Image 1 (tube, rainbow, N blue to C red):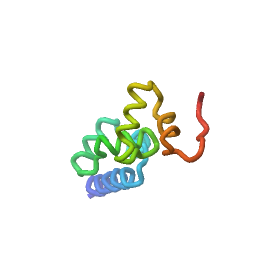
Image 2 (tube, rainbow, N blue to C red):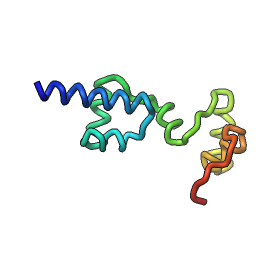
Image 3 (tube, helix red, strand yellow):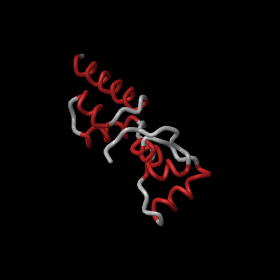
Image 4 (tube, helix red, strand yellow):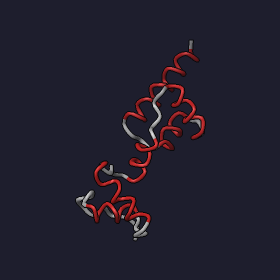
Length: 100
């Protein structure tokens, strides 16, 4: 009975974490497992992030489809960082504090 409750609690933590866009490391730490184990469990639950969603999560902002080509052009040819490209294209409205 306890194993069933533990499994249900684990599922709920994983689903809530993915739904709230929490970092995977935080979710894994909360349930006490490795990052790889978390990804396997999330895959079995069907709640993994698509590569597009994962990239947007890592960047911290979403690139609209109409600006995606310009964004990648700046990244590749212009050698700009992701945040700099976003500022040039007007995707970020305020300057976020960060290491420079």
